Length: 265
Ligand code: SF4
Image 1 (cartoon, rainbow, N blue to C red):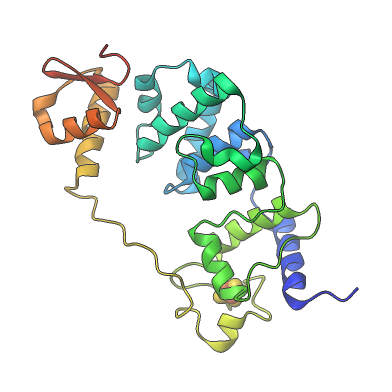
Image 2 (tube, rainbow, N blue to C red):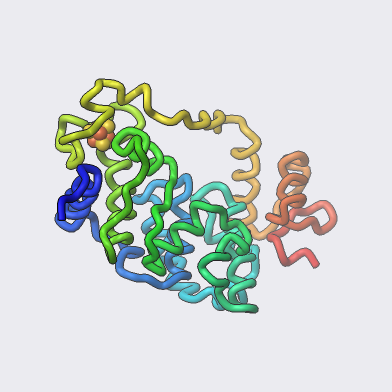
């Protein structure tokens, strides 16, 4: 059987991954809970920063039912430093659903709180090994540049490897800025974007991250850190940020004080 060039490229990519793909803790498991935790943490946070959080988290709450029984305030305190605490609240809510009703059918992962298309596809591919390519911003970029006719699919039984390999390639070689096309990219041979010299032009646009310094994100982060450290903080320290945390269920009010979510009642 003669393989199409793109299908051959996918095989090459998997061989590269088999040789060089880093050993990461969430790659040693197909447990749905472990995959969900890692995927939620990896959204918007780099791998090296996630690693110690993931290890601590899984040691403390190895199953969804363990997290479901935890207080939200403790969950948010453990998340402190990873950013975007809404992710922790959603993970907690998803754990409660799973503890209560079990995992939904893979077609229905999007029913879990905070689980969108990408995370659902990641569960399908990295936990269930279904033939799906989870497309985060890195993978979308590789597809646009290297497979402009669309993802050709992975060989039977290799969807997990292809998905992980695409993640690594997007992070290490096919980067948004200064891609390493001619510095070892394993998919350089036959790459349409690199051959045509149009790599930048076929890079999907991403939203610019808003400035962190002085932002509401930063102000909310200060309050959450103080809550994790001291257990309570005066809401008047930053009323606007305090109200926004309460409105989102990330903290509670007790009189003039802000207290960890779940402890104010
Ligand atoms: S050759 Fe360049 S554009 Fe093509 S896949 Fe590799 S890094 Fe991306």
